[in-house]
Length: 146
Length: 146
DNA sequence: TGACACTATTTGTACATACAACTACATTCA
DNA sequence: TGAATGTAGTTGTATGTACAAATAGTGTCA
Image (cartoon, rainbow over all chains, first blue to last red; front, side, top):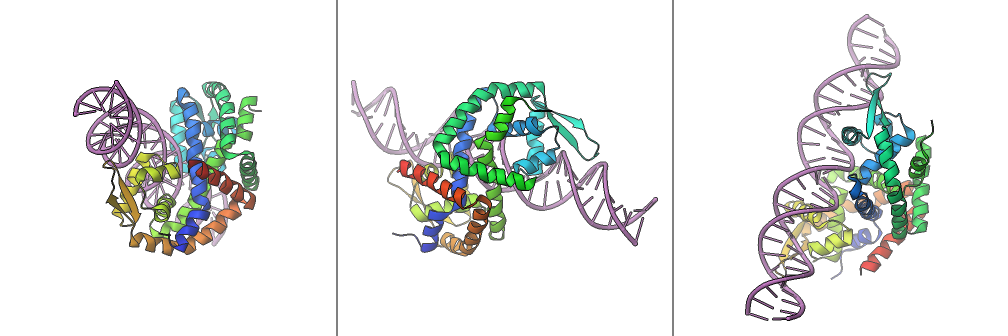
């Protein structure tokens, strides 16, 4: 019994289900690799962003990673509690800045070899063409964001 | 002040942060479009899979979408409670099958125009090359899974 | 300068997601 | 045929995620 035309089209062509599927698959590969370190890819992504661009406000990190401000707020709390991030007051009394701590940098150093191995696994899953295409798309997005 | 070499490399090249960022962006675009229907893209993805491939067991849906079986179990509960999916007993006493209901099909029909508009938005965000690359990658994955 | 609008963050709530542990049934094989 | 092993589903728990509302500070302008 064949599904209705609309259903067939949505099943065959939907971009969202494909991106979301790859997201789950890739998140799982990363989290498996990171399990010995007691950290997940969501947190590592934030640590790397702050280590690279910090000191930086939560608002700027959230925009950069296309994360809701409230999500980042709670994720950052965990990273601060773990001693990987720290906060400093800022000129704007509503805000503050985030910075990576020495312990946070040390964690990223320990993770680096696993990250390299993970990149290989992800490239094997996605294929070189898709890796390049996604990289280009996100670089364009970031360029537009300034 | 420049970040350490490892951090710079992870910030510039990490595949995972890019896929995960696009996932959040795309999920938000879809959920915004679906809000008037009181349903989210995660649920629509499951409804379409069941409508297209059902009757089908929860286990098969979860494998197809690369979802944990426990995630699917709870998502399906909500869809059943909403009247969009129904269950039937199966030969295997451990399992059962899921099927789309007439109300579920009717919902997908109502969503279809919004889905078409959403595909355009997503293609504009990702670019045609990335859409094609992701489609190819996921089609390959599904082909391997049988 | 004081009211109003704007911005940054946090908190309440709900859904999405996964892992581990548990239950129930099926399969295998000695 | 019965014990061991494997498979399907559910439930407990924790994280990730977003929206709405609340809080608090900034900026503007009449």
